[in-house]
Length: 377
Picture (cartoon, rainbow, N blue to C red):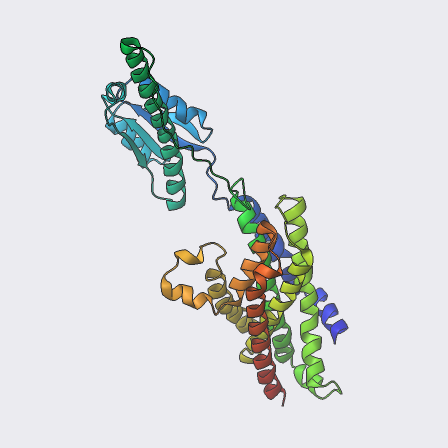
């Protein structure tokens, strides 16, 4: 049965495409096209003060390496045109009197207008702009303190003035460069295993029904457990092959860090395959044609995908959606894969997710096998 399934899978053009095209497409899309990083934001600089202080603030933005100055609008209408045409991600507006207030030590403000069409880009650009303005503010404050110290020294001799300051240093663990590619590509492994094994398992069994060969298999000496194993074990190999393919590409092509244990990843994948194979068996029992099996696969896959934390952090979801994720096996495998890749986590940190995968896998597979048995009988 296993040999027959391999021959049949490799001979069918649709099955061959399912083996190779989805892994390559997802890998290329999430590796090259899907990129949430903002390295060179385009901004417009609207200087209504034109003083050395405003030019010094401009140098902070230019020297940060985060911004490209795309224009210098000199009127409200020109600024509005650039924003409406999506020519810039933000406009930094220095109001009149900015330099005078800085020199006199008064409170002043800088207006940052951000294009909020893309909320992710808007929040990142806003954060970068705030950092540049904060650096300028700290430097201006230090200059004011030094000026006061020199004035006091000139009047009454040396004066020891303390200048308290807070030095904030940020250290990013696990993904120091904050590259979204490092976050997405490990998740591609989860999606590939889920989609390929789920759809191929369901379609392989439904195809026997559709072409009328299931009855022929039932009258052979093969027993139901052997039939189920013969139909599912080949797709265990397919799922692991796709995992190794994406893993090799992630390490060699995209240089994604891999800090954990390969054997832990492999063992967790085996536990997760119990769930996908069981779900594929269940789909095969409710479908009569391959088209129905494909539609049912998409119905199962989309909620699993959206509630897995692949794109959207689970903590940002509504409370009801967060509760639903606890019933999603894909969530636990996603946490394991990212933990192994980026954090180098071991069994001592990931055992709750592994126990959850084992529970869901055994339960779903057992229920699906029982239902499949009844259909064979």
